[in-house]
Image 1 (cartoon, rainbow, N blue to C red):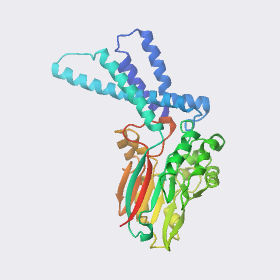
Image 2 (spheres, rainbow, N blue to C red):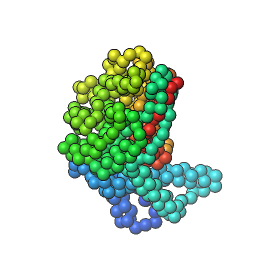
Image 3 (cartoon, one colour):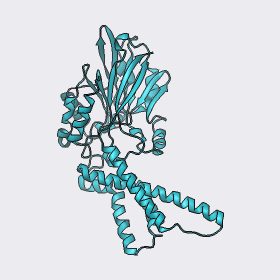
Length: 371
């Protein structure tokens, strides 16, 4: 079904864009074939590399393929809008009309330009986004406490060792007291990604680097990857918590497993287990890759939940579709039953659909204040 999804925009383009053009049939057929390859690049990747989640494709080719895929989808949307406009005009004028070829060519140029821009925005080292969050019961010793949230790095052929190193270097300049990573760090097996994730060992924060899993950890050997994160200097939070102390005051950092674990016979998310033993007067920050269970965390007394997974919806308009699959949570800050939920747009995103238009990636620096 996933592969059939991309046939739909291809069909729209062939039937409503290519066929009406006044061009030789062989040209239309050749363009249709090229666009079919673009539309079905995930299926082709599965045949060639054995995986759609981690195709071993180098960064330049991946950027080109993502730009073309984005252009194809945008062109299909533009064509449908053009058809709607032409239909309205024909209803008003009471006569049949056809859109000029020049209008279609202009649409194609705009779609390609936006596809290139979207791929570039998706693959860059993200800018810093500063967020201030008030925490009930936060001790004075933690006033101004700084956290950097990393999430959805999806280290892969599109986001290789050089990109990871640049992200680590930028993160280390942000003066974080703690670095919190909310899952989906990589795409690929440890054998294929070992060198690409190696720079993560360079992350530095006085109170440590903490990591909870996302759904993609379960696709490539969950336990192996979680143990490797520990070897890179991270503290693993799998339905567990850690206490940070500062001059006698404490702050709890908890993390839960991803729901993907349950479908693989592994423990799923358990907020109660993660925070078990945290004193009642200690504020809790919860790392939960997916935001859709935020209300459960709020019922358990969590003060702040940090999530990712949605990639911010990636493209304006598409974010509303992504929100519906995540209980309405897709990007930014939400008040959930006296708990604050922050959903990051992500440090990167899956290389199979790496496009961003109006939903930028981010290195999220969160400053905590007393409420």
